[in-house]
Amino acid sequence: MISRGFVDGAGRRVALHEVSDDNWRAVADVAPLDDQRRYVPALAARYLLLSLREGVWNSFAVCADDTVVGHMMWGRDEDGSYWIGGMVIDGGEQGRGLGRAAVRTLMGWLADRADCQVIRLSHHPDNTVAAALYASVGFRPTAAVEGDEVVAEYPCRQP
Image (cartoon, rainbow, N blue to C red; front, side, top):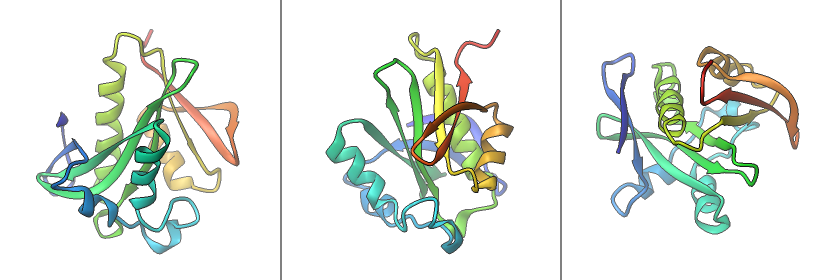
C-alpha cells in the first residue's frame, strides 16, 4: 500500500494498493461517467489488461479507506522518465478529490525514486477537467504529443 496521508472530501484515507486476487474484480469494474468515455475506456478492465499483457504498465487500485474507487497505472519509459497513465475514478465517486489525492500519492512515490528526473502523463486536449487537475498539482504542458494527446511533465527534483 502507498499512502501519503491524503483524504477525500468525506475524510476517507486515499491510498494506492497493488491489484490482487482480492480486489482485481472491483478494479476491473471501475467505470467513468458516460461523458468521459471519449477519453478513457468504459471500464478499467482495459487498463488492467494492458498492465498484464504489455509489460510496460503497472496497475494500482485507488482506494478510499478500504473501498476500491478507481484505477491508475505507472510505467518507466526507455528514456528513464516515469509516466502516470490510465487513471479512472468511478463515476459515482467523482467530485470528492479522489483523483487529485491519487495523482499526488503516485507523484510522491515516483519522485522518491533516486533515478526519477521527470514524471510525464498525457491527456486529450479537449479534456479540460484532466488538464486542470494535472496543472493544479504541478504538471506543465510540453510541446510533445503522444498520439492525439498533450504531454505534460513534472520535475522530480524541484529547484
